[in-house]
Amino acid sequence: MAAAPQHNKLWNRNFAVLWAGQTQSYLGDAFLNIGLMWFVLELTGSAAAAATVLVLGGLPKLLGPLTGILVDRADKKTLMIASDVLRGALLILMYLLFLWDKLQVWHLYALIVLLSALSIIYGPSLRVLLPRLVPNESLPAANSALQASLQVSTIVGASLAGVALVAFGAPMALLIDGISFLVAAVAIALVRLPQKKEASSKTLQPSEIWRDLLDGLRYILTSREVLVLTALAFIINLVLSPVNVIFPVFSKDVLGAGVAGFGLLASTIAIGLFLGNIVVGSIGDRLHYTRSILTGLAIMCFGLVGLGFSLSLLTALLFTALLGSGVPFIQVALVTRLQRAVPPMLQGRVFSTLEAVVTLALPIAAGLAGRALMTYAVSSIFYVAAAGIFLVAVAWTGFSAKHYQPDMQPS
Image (cartoon, rainbow, N blue to C red; front, side):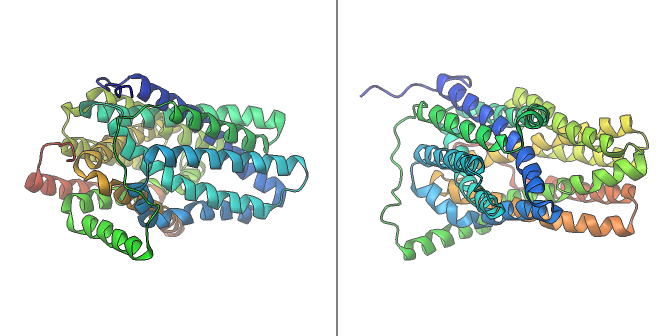
């Protein structure tokens, strides 16, 4: 058997193949995000049905601690390939049902649940697999590269989807994303990994599932650093999630820019995320993860305060970009730290639980924002969010001062 290739640089063959597969898949997802919502509206004429899609998409992610057991026990590459093939097949099947005039709205609801369930296996598997493809010192850049490609694909994909779906119809998004998942599966199959024995899930008994679940939760709750990072991810998403609720009101009532302004604000925060990922990727380990997180919190706080003061669209766009640019300083540092510090046999459960916690923040944030908008001015909400981030930054400074540790590769 040939020796496993040496992954002594970031853009080695295996990471480049994985990155290319992920990027085109992100582009397909952008088509689906636009096309599916529009298609549900066309099919039902109901905004409530479209909202149901969003709710159903979030529910399976709450099962993260359970799916993490599978990620920890099974071969990550096999899980990712199987997940992509299944998602691709499901989407193409839905498109065929549409062509045969047999597609009903409940089919789309079931599709969303299944896609979401597969994604909570795929995402953590990718995070666990990544350290095996690049050298340890390149992990921040690798995480940044994947996040940057996600942001570019979202921006470009949304624009292309608007044109393509007008020409070919919203259901075409099902076919496009389905094909992109199959291409991603081929890309992952082409990745050659260093040999590493994976725990088998074939003989997993109910008692073992319960034991693994408790072991994972016990580790998260007793590892102060992991617990704090998980709480930090929840808080950041609690602050950022309501932008889609607040920005339309902000654009209409404060900026006087209407729906066009809302679209620009949504695009600008994605541009900020992209630029932040580029900067973070270029800095790498030269900025310790504790200082990177503090930097991101400071940038976000300043961006939120600036939005509170903004009365013109141009000023709001600048501070929105600034707000988005701070997030990668936190996100990349957080993920990279967990990849390095959490024992490999627990990383699936940690990342799956993290995703469940982040998902839980979405409806909470939307509900709080909706109620706040009924009582308070938009500027006040931005100021309160900024104050919250400032307090988090103070708490993080105290925590990191007491528990500072150099980055490490998990044993």
